[in-house]
Length: 347
Image 1 (tube, rainbow, N blue to C red):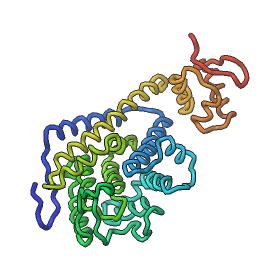
Image 2 (image 1 turned 45 degrees about the horizontal axis):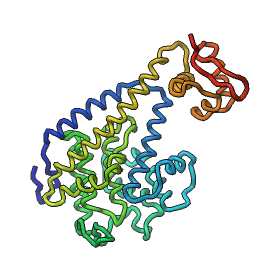
Image 3 (image 1 turned 30 degrees about the vertical axis):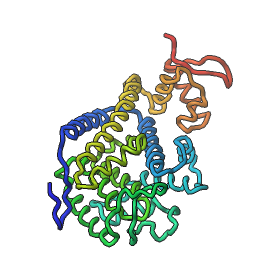
């Protein structure tokens, strides 16, 4: 694959590693797509993926919040009081509505809109929110003064993106979606269209490609955790293509990351599907009743408050579910009053 002067064409080789990764990804995707889990777990998996992505992608860039702090921030709908919180919430809000940025094709406006909402309230100069850079940038280490990479001149950014997007919008039928996402990720990092926020924008655009092609598997999985667990490996993989523009090593790394992430989701989904299947064919059980029974499978005994918290319902609504399950002899109570616990029948 040669790179011409007038058209972007990625240079890489389909190695045995890449082909094997793709085959295993396709197999895992099929398993996840066919697994049957109750709506409550579907919602939980999606929310967990959103929270993890928001944490790990911003953590790569140095955000100091830990995962528990990010969970609290998002689940409690807190207003941001620091830039670190603003950065996480910006990422979460863009990711949570990512498909809204796509309308038949991906344009420069798509990328600009994603960047604008990602960097809202974060840049020293707000006019650069959702605007391509007009100044040179250098990627390096502030402490050692070592320069790692000098991106293309600012004046080249618009036409480099035009070439990339022209290729992107005409390649979807010829190339596997995971490969397309990996190439887009790398090229956006290489072009570095913005003064800041390039990494986050690149990762979100790769996620958008996977989502458009239904490769985010019901919004269950996140790549950012894989990148964050060894940031240097992530950086080194990106740098591997800088000298000769051959993306093979990067795409091996990218595909391995997708497989690692999708395998984790597959294990979790299969476990939840196994729990769900015990009650799925039980006559006249509502989704909420199944949810209570699956919670009981995990905890062995539960209280009214556990059900309220899980389903976000009132004590009265929780008690109605308990009463119905007791009448069907699917649970039994132990103790009295506030200390009452519910377990599976001994028979």
